[in-house]
Length: 401
Image (cartoon, rainbow, N blue to C red; front, top):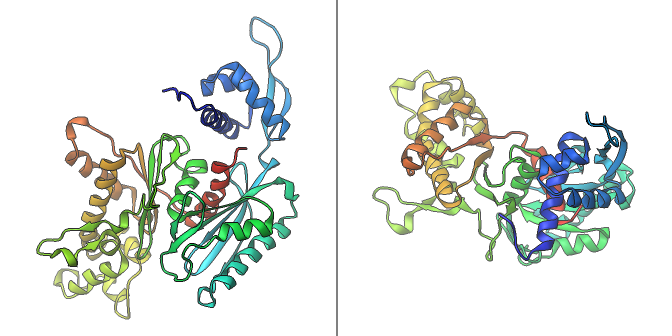
């Protein structure tokens, strides 16, 4: 459907569409671009001319003439190392950083431990030094950097990029980290929360690069969040709460309203280990490795899901107990956003494909089965790399290439 009265938006969409083909094919002709994007030859010519001026595209020779003869078509080459973006994800313990080219390849990377307890100014200094150090390490001309994308686990004001609050750290309320870094670095700095970061990683260079409507579900030991892209646009909201699905309360049988827990609790590691302790004496699972792994403390998601995938009965019993909550969460997302694709990231992504196929089939049967909607659920790994690429994706998304 055409977008009327929004030429700037249309130019951005057309440019991204053409860049996607260039990135996938690396070498293409004008006719290839016209055919694969559906854009007019004039529009393709205008975009190509602009990309040539900025060094993102160059001419790489000529192709074969058609059977009717005529001029040989120019072959255009995509130059992924013409520009770079820096992506940095700041987590509860560490910050991960990398320099990405236009192919989404991480060329240089580093990480540091974040000293949150030393205060806001110290952490700001750590992040600034981390960025400057990797720029020095790369030895790339400053003119080739488009900017820095930062991801944080908290609520970020999408209008001005200020930190409204961080999930587990006090003292960061209404803090302009982006403004401080931008002034020192003399290049654009964009900040989003980690839900947005991870969904951008999938949009630009991940499982969703061919999808316009998709949702990522981020799963950690004690957190659940979602990133949403609809009509190829990252979704945000006035109060910056869009995608905070982990905080949706669940009604349990016999629970009073003030004792309701949310998805983060029911899908978190603490609840999983509570289920294990409640059933540890079950005779049917006396020889399960789960008991040994929890003998001196908590089991990790990695160990539990490995045992589930290998067929351990007790592990399958435990995972079955929490699957009802994950199914309910995904069902809520399906009914709210109607995505083409749902991508599972983080801890739960280590569960086998058939596990998510069963959830998909269950939802398909329960949510308007007459519609016969296909619920596509995929899982992604390499969370660290995806977060770096996603943070760089902020720059690709916000700044016109």
